[in-house]
Length: 302
Image (cartoon, rainbow, N blue to C red; front, side):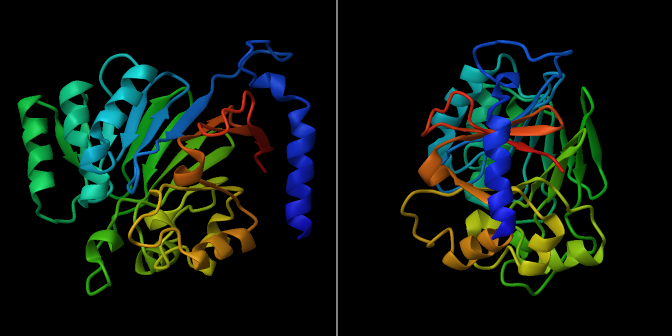
């Protein structure tokens, strides 16, 4: 309770200095620091997130279901010119890859990192066809791979597990590509559709999990977000990518309660629309499409 009260006070105090991020363009004292922006795009029941680095490099993580393709491509075209620098597929389920064929064909991509764990499907074959038609180089996502996004921002792949997890409730989910983005003092953890076995593996592997922002695993399902994992991440902000009135009951009340116990402020694409996180590496601003807040909320990175 005390942590939540401190968090609310912190938001209120930092709201007084929101001109550092204000859309009015008024500059704060001192030299401007380039921002890292991450848009958790509302694609319904699925995942898609666009990273824009301080140097202007773009990374798209997943592409939502097939029906989200037009909405996703429209968002990308409205926010950026030219092809996406890097597309990352966290695992081969249709609600994460379905919209990527449209992105590759209509927006373009310079590089594609594929999730290694096999899961054949018509949707995946369609994606491979689009990548071949557009001559996009394809590489495998490997644990330990790092990507320099420029301006001091980096991506680090923390999984898939090696050797792969087997015999779990869903081996495709359990072997998801989990990655983190770091910019100065701020970390953002993308948990893909990782489940409890993945979380245990990451903890045993001593992966660097602590992050101010968490893309909640598996749309907030009850099979992820264990208490031990959330203690290791200790997020201030949790974003759940989930569709309205979905058939899976996501997000699970158990998971929402666990995030609340972890003192994370929860954002959901089914209620908030696209959630945008902006940071100068010291402070974090959250804007949502549904509230259309001019300045959003600003938190401080510990």
